[in-house]
Length: 162
Image (cartoon, rainbow, N blue to C red; front, top):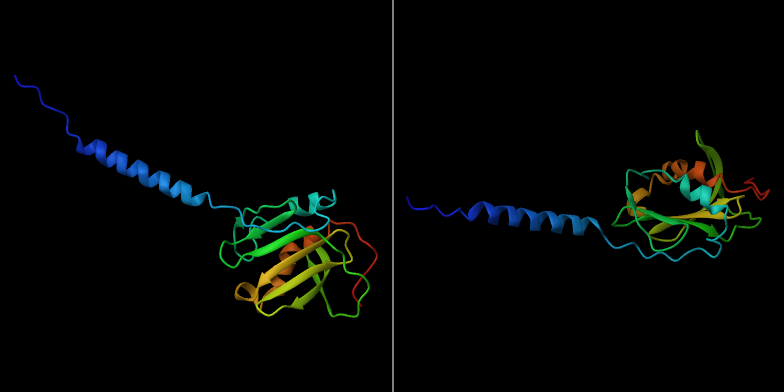
């Protein structure tokens, strides 16, 4: 009785599916977003702030970053958080007070054209967020409410909004 040779097609299909799966996995391992660390990123008080950052922000998932005490949310037009920026001193600039269940925090919010730059006021080290307007032009307060709790974990420096 002649011996039947195994069909090579199932192996080819399995190999093709394996290659596709590897491609998907490699695409998921995106390169970290290059973010310059803040001047005081090594301050130990940044650790509890960064560890308390939300799982998602503005509906965006975290994206890895290249620097200590930083995080980003979203791959395209990311919202970037950096702990350890220079704390703002006394100012007459307008301030936004955000009250949330997680904590109350004052923010200095500056319009920089295509993005908002928000810095936690009254905290040392300070947390800074850059929020592209395409992400939250009308909802900056909502995004700040999500990070006010973590930002409020940094020690108070005695300054408050008026």
